[in-house]
Length: 200
Image (cartoon, rainbow, N blue to C red; front, side, top):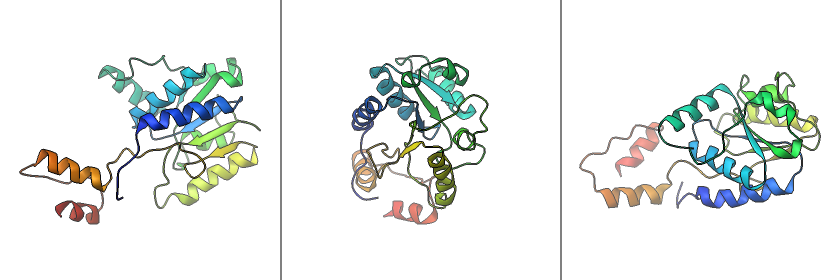
């Protein structure tokens, strides 16, 4: 990707605005490994007087690891999925796994109405705070269609500013190499074509 990526700071303003516009449950599907996104969602929710529930084992694992390493200490404690049903709909944000349509992830189970604690209904909102990874389009579409059948509003990055990449864009990688001037660089992530591009 040419150019530069956006910042989590700009995303915070966008999510704050979205959270203020809806008065039902709000679900946010994102990658569990994106700790910065968990913080952004938590801050936006706090500014809108909403509690944040984590739904998905990998989210809780990442949260615990982040806290152990000094991250996410400045946001309110996340609540359990078991507490969601005791809160008014307009006082909760649900962060869940499954942004790529994974069949056993929390969002797929919610869409199938088979999750033991979380249910969504007409007027609720699900924000896909991620990009569609190529090859996952059908799985994501399946989940989104099931949510739409239940009257849930879907918001993606095509509708609103709800995602920024956690990966650097081309110009940022060039800037990093020009700044650091490494003697050796070993690309370790991506396909062969990405690794070859890093050699240039």
